Image (cartoon, rainbow, N blue to C red; front, side):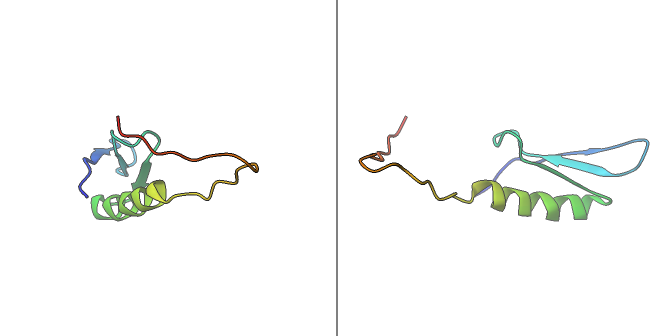
Length: 66
């Protein structure tokens, strides 16, 4: 799967920020552009990991397409 990644260089520190517009809150940074890209790749993987959901007895899960 491909994602758009926005990279921005901080003019004061020279560090790079990276974020994914389609994944709210998915952001990272690095001291180089390559490091920022590696870090955002890891952040995307973690963002997309499913967390186990503990449901009370009798609860039903359904999936829908919108």
